[in-house]
Length: 434
Ligand SMILES: Cc1cc2nc3c(=O)[nH]c(=O)nc-3n(C[C@H](O)[C@H](O)[C@H](O)COP(=O)(O)OP(=O)(O)OC[C@H]3O[C@@H](n4cnc5c(N)ncnc54)[C@H](O)[C@@H]3O)c2cc1C
Image 1 (cartoon, rainbow, N blue to C red):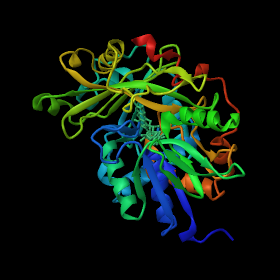
Image 2: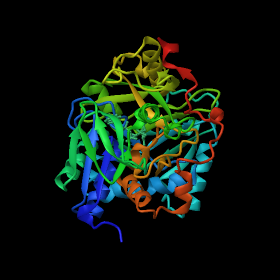
Image 3: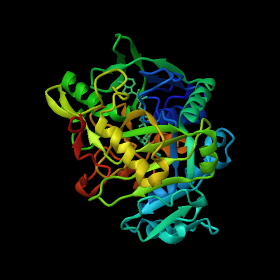
């Protein structure tokens, strides 16, 4: 028999969507357990380094991979129906300018999963698509595009709002939130992980330590490998820290009216053209957000090895955006709105860092180097939408009840594919833009 609920203890490092969802699901499933959620940024800080902290994120089930399509449909069901999540979800629709046969694959997935589309998911020839949504995308770049996929059952969510509210709920239910940076892991005499040590020297102990540390994960593990002398901790080729640039423009009231009903717009590109770029609809402050198409790493020497990690500053230097990346966001604006967007002033540029795997699959797995240590992160630029449900899968992993296909898909040790055809795998360095 395992320990009773009030003897179980968990430390979750990282209060992004993976860590916060895990904490919420743990405390909900096992009331009375000890769950400590640790993050270097306070949960209500005005600005945070988490990729999960953002003005808004796309919530869509349009996936080429049927497994993530099914998972995203399950997440969307919660976003739509659950009173805890619903206030943050906006079903604006998503307009996919696709160049890779993506429309067909998504339609096939919905059919295969038996998900009725009720005429709300369809592909349109470009000439027809240009007229949709009052023609807001008539000036977009349609080079090489045969059809546009419209999914009116997809949309976006208020990312900061949801992250804050869910953390508050977890704390109300008994999760302890600690604001501290974790410098090291603690081990018992057999090498089992028994907790964490902060940069201030404080030690927190627990039976289970879960790292949901996003882009910082490879650096943290590298430091653990260095201090323990155990190479097995290293992430190696499994995870890379990668950045993407975003920017926002405030529209005046008159212009905002014209764009009030617009959906998310994504330019989905083949590998030769780069990654996707796109725009999210107006938030309550009438701001549009874009993400650029360059994805880059930041290779540096850590513990004597070449590792990609966010810049060392406590805010990951995320607001210091080089000119060339500011231009990358301009490019996204032009590709989406053409001449219509020329007069808009794009501000608040940010480099957002995420942990990416070569297959874009998450890692939700025990770490084989140490009993009691687990990894639950690697959103690979698409993890946010799973916020309502991903913690449930982490709990299943902890309980050894994760379905075998997901267990192998998300394992620490799995086949690593060649990422050269993967559009989100970073091919450039941040310094190439400086
Ligand atoms: C520009 C951009 C756009 C995206 N758009 C979408 C989208 O539209 N839809 C979607 O589904 N996904 C999207 N994603 C992906 C999604 O945001 C991420 O996959 C997801 O948020 C990652 O969550 P996480 O919990 O793993 O990491 P994070 O959210 O980065 O959280 C990690 C946390 O760990 C903390 N931490 C790290 N190291 C330590 C330490 N040593 N001590 C203490 N705390 C530490 C950090 O402070 C941080 O809060 C996007 C990502 C980016 C960058």
